[in-house]
Image (cartoon, rainbow, N blue to C red):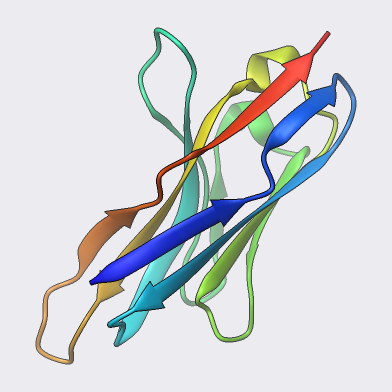
Length: 121
């Protein structure tokens, strides 16, 4: 079993900043990519940012230049630094990880329970 636990969400005014964290634990052989998705009310879940095990990153166009995704040296924790937040960034943010639980196991996707980010205008 693999668990992802997010923290750092909350309420912030437009133009402010928040930092999300997500720690993975459990039976982990290797974590490939880790990242963040978000889902606003009435909308589909969308990719925000992802970072591979090699450090390569990918961002949604709407957050480029404002958000930064990173991982710790153990590569089991992923962060999302969110600056210059806008009301349209309001959503539930979900952590995601592509995890191998054993040498011969195929990787599987795991999700955190989500953390609410609300940006007031």
